[in-house]
Length: 638
Image (tube, rainbow, N blue to C red; front, side, top):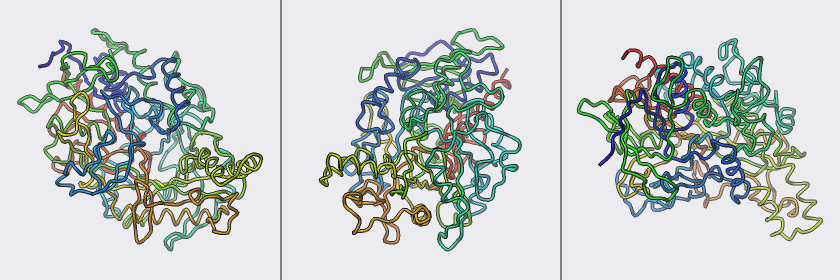
């Protein structure tokens, strides 16, 4: 039994993250629309005091993981990287025997490998803890099947998406960057950017970046028999720097959460203490200020209503295969019982904008949009491996955001016909990500008998020289990587938890091998030696502090007798991909489901492939496109 609300909205959006916020803003800015956003999580940061409590939670947390400031909510539970473990007794993916599934975390993991990415279920979504890197995809990424015989092609080109990238960078996120300081294989600035420039100046390179550029730029390395010229690239980012011309940073004027300019606190993940980094809360705040909820929107002003703590449980479908409503359940507090009967809300158009996993779970629970059998299939991420060592000179980590530069020369090339492309992220936080330093450094020195003045002296020599790279792999869509549901795995409100089957093919594993070879070659140029048995144990007391992949690591894999330990990048994608035909995709190029003409899907789940760029910017560009489509569709109805 449910209660049906009397209101009829123009658009009902499920999910209050960046995809939902972008679709809502794009539609609302045309005026005269009634829009409802349903968010399963709590509104944890929409005021200064609430945001301050999140910062305090991060500061007091012992494990500085992505979700450290954002408590798990039993009514809208979320995955956590601390729950990840090796999968044992790996089952047949077609049988999924329950006795072999690891359900100790939010995900029910069926293996063979653990899916290692997380996300945040709260208003603002995972932009609450993202890094903020805003890379565009490369033109060749849209044609990987045609060019390299791998994956699938997109039903659009880079040129089709380029104007939406510009709108996403300028009108939604507010990106800081330089079009002349990005160096991609086979790309020149005029064909890639035209006469466009980012709305804010680049975030300055860190001291580490400057040291690396001095030692690497213009040098050549040999990888798999081919020669590659090394050149640093500044990474465009969704964080406040110095605005160009008359650009007004996102959310201004009048938004107390607009944020300061980046102070270089080096904890963008999990939270920026001064809100210099963009989060969807800024767009949502702007929506509420410019388009406050009312039953009577005007031609110039839309009405946007946001309901948090509202968990969508079912998509209602009528006899004509049209969506007739979204049923959701509310709750008053974390861990509390439902506060009312389920409610059903009606609209002219419906958008699912949760994320690639939650969208797929809701579609599967509702028997919706799955005539192709591809809902939940083709789950992708950017599996990454880390390398780390000691620079011969101090590079002084923790000065700047977590990353300000990358090495992009392996993002495209003929090698993609045999193995993954990858990008190399340069980390500004020493061995924090790689080996939990400096805490682990101090502990291990003490365990090795180093104390007092000698301890301080050793820390002073070692920690300023710590350095790491993250080698992030392109992953191709495969139907054997999927999200499904099982009645045995439910959350507190009775909804389905995601059941995930995940593995890495040789295409990715060979990418690991190529990336590690590239890293080794650059480490040689930098003067970073491998750990030797004869090294002074007081300065090099433990091999774990150099790149080492252990068979006990959760994501340990083998390739040609070499072991690698991978982690997730938090870039989940692909579970309801777009395409040109209803039997090979879930949505069309306009991101409308093939099965229901009034249901649209937003988010990275629409992406046929992920390339090598952090996907949030592409998702935002696609969401702007989707907003335009819905505006046109609503106009055609009137």
